[in-house]
Image (cartoon, rainbow, N blue to C red; front, side):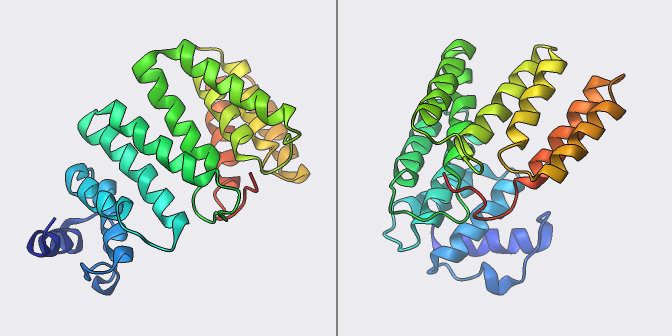
Length: 231
């Protein structure tokens, strides 16, 4: 993307974007922080093609903030998925992001290893089918447990149970879906919050779909804090 086109997309966001930040946060073509912000704003508005160009400029640039680079690679993969339906390229982007994220020396604040892996599972399901995605989900979760990593704030186990819950809901197995989401919650919530989830479940037992939505939203909100996960 050249400077002229970049300037046009900045103007688009400031005039028509769903989120309109101050111009000073996105106007500088030469700053990767501005390009990545503009890319995310464009992706949020379903403008995936220009977003891909911007995320690719970050992916191939040597920047010190590896956390942001990993996050940009995940966003790039999702844009290839949603914008171009290029699943193979999307999986490749997520593979690179996960490879970088799993470096033990990398300290992540915004990126989550489990979230990258979770998005990869959804793509594997679309490309290769549910059976392979479920197998990869189970294999990774078991490997975490066997490695002694069955601890609070493990992003693989949290997102693994989220994935399982979503899958069971799609099959209509709402009781099992709720059970998986509650298991996910145990990796991010304190005991008082777990009790609140149990209260929601009892309150909505007659409408399991409503219970699922409430519990899912509550658990998901508890997992939104930056740097929450240690694995």
